Length: 271
Length: 271
Image 1 (cartoon, rainbow over the protein chains, first blue to last red):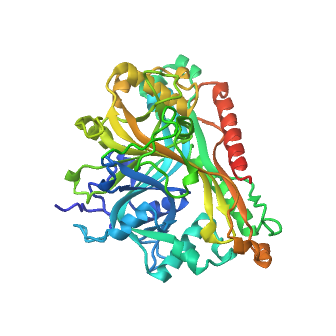
Image 2: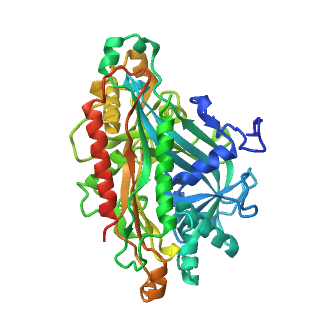
Image 3: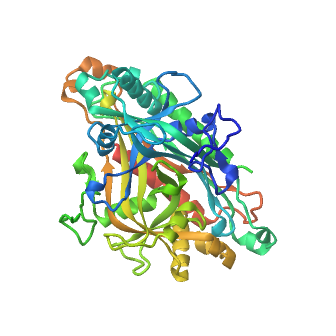
């Protein structure tokens, strides 16, 4: 059975398949690389699901791990096209062990363990006149792929720098370079994306037509959007810190991030 | 095979099993109800993983959905003890359909589909002298359980109010009461928790002993914590809003939330 359904723009995005097609509120579904990858990169935390091994007597529960990571393409480093998702974790953690032990291939031609990576940015609470029309403004991505442990040293080092600087830009070059033991203790997972989609909601409330006729009720119930965003506060030096003042690259980034995310949430709340 | 291992305080928390025991950084693991339930309730978004049906030719990928929900116990509504996780979604969504169609029981004596619910609050970025000692301050919960579609009307209505007021306190009683069609279109899932654990990191940087001897390097690299929290911005009325001004219950809640989460993140960054 083929999963692949024609996409209008297959060269710049993920193909729509039975797995990744947004069914509820179809208009919110997005499949282009340039819509999907920035959401993954902006999310401070990614959630990664995998099926844990049956020998743990786990009643077939999937497992979710919160992880740090971002998109990247080691072969074509500046591409806006195809990318994998790089994740960072302790080298002997369960997901690393499972990925390392599982190199059998399946129908898709890939090896590694099947995972789902989810990135969610909440941009606002949408309060309509009745709770059942409440909603959220958000940008969310769900990506399906196979997770591999990256063994090649140059790709590992490149990915560590990528993930570090995705969290705080320019951080890698402003720290002490890791030693061999530290490098070995850090596991890097590369999720090769099989399919992905984004779902985005922006805008103000959507109301039932009947409700808009009821002016007495509308005077009693406040309707609108409460914008929300992640902010970074004033950095607090460690007791062991000896650097004078706050470096400009951190100060600028905190300011830019807060301004950018606050503006997005407010604009998303607009009509 | 029994999963159940003795917990020191089984009456106030989840038993430690092979499934939920925190292995990496054991000291960060928490199992008590009073530690776990508030994290789930505070997280603005929950991530829910389930195994999608094989008839979609999905190469066994798990699926993650971002959903709204919170903890609750319909029988003993004010209990600080055992709780389920109530989730809210569209009645014909895939996870609702799967849960409804799947009522077979398994070894655990429960019916419903096996899911993992994850709640993550990011409280800060911990920047050590070397990237491999970077970390985050966070509070995260992973709960394993079986998801059931709630059919009983009084429990459904109670859960809708619970979830609405968990998002914005007092919102339910300040809106137009939903009609029969709206109530029917809203699906409520109850996840009966089989096991759960929380993982919490607070504090400043943890450095390698060797690094603390290198004063020249310490003068070059800034080390410390950038606290982070979700904030709610100035509420933006819908163009159709007819309520004068902002209701006090929203204004107070936004102010309290921002003050509380900012304070937590700053305190968590302390030594």
